[in-house]
Length: 493
Image (tube, rainbow, N blue to C red; front, top):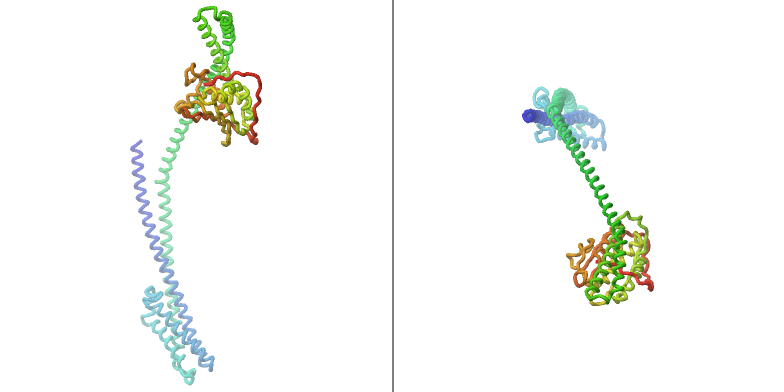
């Protein structure tokens, strides 16, 4: 196969060389053709001057005949015109015969012989006509008769020039026929060479090239078909894995929901009996027994909190309902009502800015704000909590911020705190299940938003999240109601 390609390549190189030779010959032919065309153009200019000379010579004879017949002002005008015609004849003659003239040096040999060789001697005749017409124009009025020798010489010279010019035209015609034949020959040569080049190019250059192009196209089509099959197989494999992963996630969420739900009943029973023991036998047993019972009660309470948070997290994994416009101001007010006891105990101050309408679900938005505000109340510093809730447009979303003056979070933990069951502090320092911010993250991402935190340790925190905007005017914040009902604060990270 390689040898065949080598032979074909060598054969193609030879024909390319042959084409180059043919192209060179065609180029030479075009140069010669251009020279002949230029010579033909110069001959046409010479022929024009020759015809003009014939007409001027005849005109001098006519002007001379009229000059002897008129008198007065008309004669003077004819004298001037005859002198101008004489000068014109001489100028044209120099242009034809002088090597520095317009056509000088380009006269065909046959024409040059008529000008300068006997018996015609056209050069002598033309100069004689010019001289005799000038002499007649300057002759005194008394000598201007029909018998004037200059007039006789002018008549004879004009006739001689006219006859000679006819022979010049015949010579030019013969030369033109020869030139036309030569031009036609060059035309045929160029046309034939061009056709031969096209034939050779088509047969020995483009044909092998086209065959190689078709082979390459076929190879590329095979590669493309192979790639398409691989992509289709890979796509099918990814789709199968995606379906398997979706089933696995659904099974895990279902398992978490069922397990959490089914664990509540025995846990309630354990909690009831442990609390009964605490109520009936507190102070009646030794101090160690009271401490052990307290540990049991606290463990049961933490287990209940953990199951409740796990149930909430599992419910968020189900298909989200269609988002509807939700008033963020009302959602914050609901969260503050649920946190009123914790806020009063901490001495917290909350400032709520103008909040917009967003797309989501009202209950989940209340839970989102409640978790973030409760988080700020829990991880407060030595000073009373100062909280701010505000929003700004970040097209096509709204960006919400919950800012506090708490203990802050080190930058290396900014991502970790949104992972389920992640805690940064011991349980004896801050209570909680480690699921509050994970629930916030799932709520926000459920509606196509994002969540994060900007914080440094000891400098407070600003939790932010984005939710889809609704084309509604921003509503002013409302003062939240202060009900007397005491609600449990959600345990946050």
